[in-house]
Amino acid sequence: MQMQVHEEMDSIKKGLQGILGKNVSFSIAMEERYSADKSYMKPQVPIAVAFPSSTSQVSRLLRFCNRHRIGVTARGAGTSLTGASIPSKGAIVVSMEKMGRVLEINIEDQYVVAQPAVVLDDLNHRLEKHGYFYPPDPGSSMVSTVGGTLSTNAGGLRGVMFGSTRRWVLGAQAVLADGTVIETGSRTLKLSRGYDLTSLLVGSEGTLAVITKAVLRIEPQHGRMGSIVAYYDRMESACGMLRSLRNAGMPIITAEFIDRRSMKYMDRKYRGQPGYMVIIGIASYSASLAHDMRLAASIVRKSGPESFYATTSKARVRGELGSRKRLFDAMAARCRESGLDMVIGDVIVPPSRLCAAVREVEKMAGRYGPGAAMFGHMGEGNIHLNIFADLGNRKHAALANRLLNSLGEIAVRHAGSISAEHGIGLEKKKLLREELDAIHSSKEIELMKGIKKAFDPKGILNPGKIFD
Image (cartoon, rainbow, N blue to C red; front, side):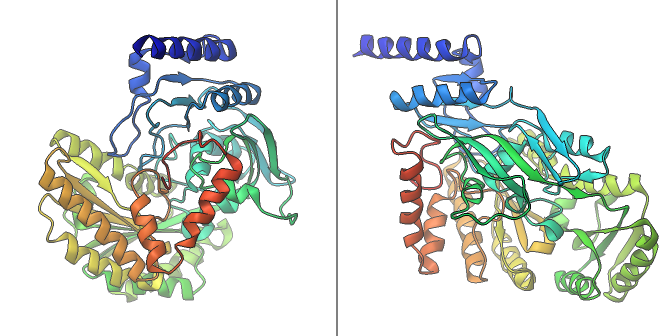
């Protein structure tokens, strides 16, 4: 039996090397590096790590793996928070990092064509020279890639104005499990030609195909941006303020909330403030920004904050948004120093239900011993509950799991969902089924499995993610 396994591995090794040459690794150190992602889920060492540099290589690689029934997990920057980037046992990781070119920038038709390893912030630095930008803006935009964000339908800090990634994908080049290359969508802003396969691929977490190229919509930059930072004792006052800003027609591009526990992990100037910090970004044109900021500040003042300030300084605006973006990593680093793990919840409710949901989450989390902190995208009703736990301790692990499940129940009870922008991965498979059962739509799982079977009959693409 052992000899047979060695012979099979030798055959796989020769096959992969025949396709990729030196761009495939069987090094234990390399395999361990690609065995985990940013989630707390248990790592799984792959049998090899492949680094294709072209769609043709991806096609040949998948054809080989499909023939030999080898699982394949495509990977971008590995920033998944639900275990979506962790390979299954006996699978290979296909790292897309050698496919990181911007292939076309078309300003007149308002799109870019990018390979999957293009980092979002790098893409926007290039677009900035043309007066344009790509709106999806996850907290990890400094490292997260086009392919990874398409895989999970990522959201982010600009979601209140621009929504999530799916809205910004016009088309894709993708390789199916049997090596077939397909081109979905188009380079046009409208298209109606049957089933929307592009939207189906976005958010599929690499379970249907490997995306090798994306056509992305871009937007003209707003002339300028201002921000308001306000502190409230009560979440209800903060929600009322945001509702008033919306009713006044304010061009809100960012609306974030951060609770007192979370503020402890931010820059020193934010610590020790009452209750909740709210960051509001106003995107406007140069001629109207001063007027918009005066009106916004007046509305914030009337909402009764403990304190607030407004700024149009580009450096301060970027600094505030940067502090918010660094918050997750700061929390994770502090947890590691304390010997704890961090489980991050990602649920969403309608914005009108946010305050009620936050109150329920606070009450529930207050009974949790090891500690938890909350922040989120207030404009969309997206709550991130960060749970601190020693997952090696059975009691801690059980409590954290119970808290995560209760968070999902609260979201569904308030007409929301157990996942807003992080996807399902390994972590939320059970929660997904429970949500669909709760809304009497369990048939969706069977439909998803049917779609998976049509795209990937042998089940080699990112096995075990979304559902078993």
